Image 1 (tube, rainbow, N blue to C red):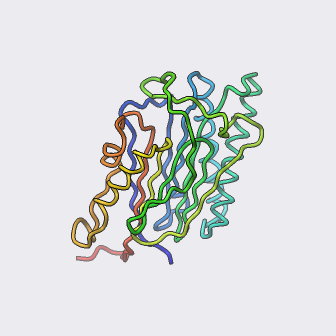
Image 2: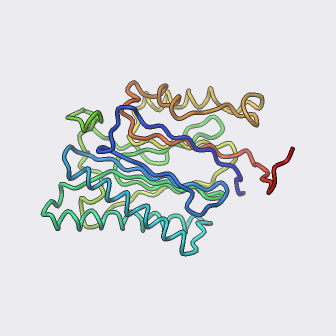
Image 3: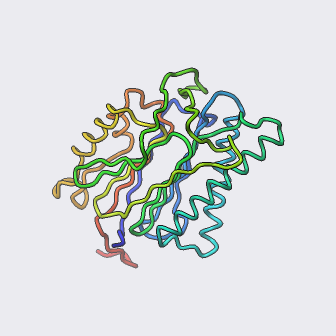
Length: 265
């Protein structure tokens, strides 16, 4: 089933500076109910990691746009998966090669995630420690397993808190070959997907579920029976330090909507 409506809202903490992270949200195929979200963050202090996330994000989005312009409609899960995997490889290669030209290999590393929704398919990919959750029928499902990232703060980039990088994780630019995690799901009207720049603790997950449960579609509140779910409100409820959230993207699917070529009424 193809979902015809997709609502998107994004939050970025007030304490986050551009040198620490960034994101891009777009509709690559200019289609109804289609969206792509790509976010990247520095994983350590220093100019190397800052360049890594910036360069990786630029090349990933460039590859995504080129793929869409070449007639790839992103109409199937396999197509989306191939585009995401190619994007991560291009991003990793650009950062890795640039780092070795500067004799900075190993010091240029970034965490990156990407999520594409098109029709009935959602495909998410990550390299690093971001997280994605699906809320459906009063149940919360993580699309990726827990990272096990040590959340001990060791420093900051501007106002951005930075955790100790987990050596078990793969990062953009750290090695010649990147290990990409891919997750996919068939979307249904009423689904909500939440993308975070960071992993969630057990308490964060509980608070996320409670927020989504209390703002669930009741059939009587909000536009078309939907209460407004804002990414900012969600982060204020889920995190004790929302100002340090690099990005949070909230995607709500449906209800099915009729689009008219002319204004009615």
